[in-house]
Image (tube, rainbow, N blue to C red; front, side):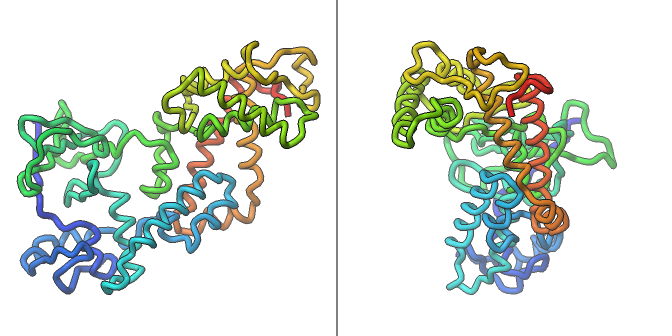
Length: 372
């Protein structure tokens, strides 16, 4: 039938558990969080602490310089994000309180790979955090702070708003699906609808197929305007003229779109609606800068006078990204594939992105019609 189990507040955080050596049991009360634990509490959570993995293969946790280690793999975005997380981890390291670097890295990797969260904090639920991920889970997780105001969630989804209970009064509910879970059947939950880069950087593995995968083509409208000007603007522009043209295009885009235009992406099902609208606006007849195919980019499939289409801008960007991926040396790829430090998951993420990009180019340009 419909199974329910409740795990009340009071469990130590991963940061507190990190006062022990990785994979072991804390030998003295008191955690990095500053909230001490009694011997009774340590005994209570001993089994769970021992069951925690001694290492989670996350690149920002185990590559000495995450940015430099990942950049040769060909994805600058992932390298920059890993470097930023690594800097936050190191900046918050409470070295003056006797915490070793090894323990702090271990704590951070556990918090990011197996915690739930709300708008204020991360929290780990012993027992529930042992469930593996599935996009078709046999169970779901519900976070309840107020019995009269609760919301069902799939693991990492948002915690409900509303009046707050004390931590000890709140609870986590692990709920079987409508068909129940038979004895001996694995209990799985969804960790969330994340794209591949989030899985690679914060979970250390990349599920496939991933219906939520996406590739960011442009970080914002400024990025898009700069790209369009450099690739399709007049070839005789000076740097100053090109910069001025990009500013005009940016104002043109903002006037038509407005709102939040960060992280413009594509998925297996198509393009971000904001991105499609922006591309259409760029090639409109009233665009402040006339964009066209440079003659050197024309393929045999395109007539010299063929007008630029919105899809051409998107396909050209995807083609550019694929070319960057191809710059990764075989030596760098080989070393990353057997490093055991999280770079393997990043390689898998990049492989999935290549598939999405290639499929997008094929859909817009066909297999052989794309300009080089």
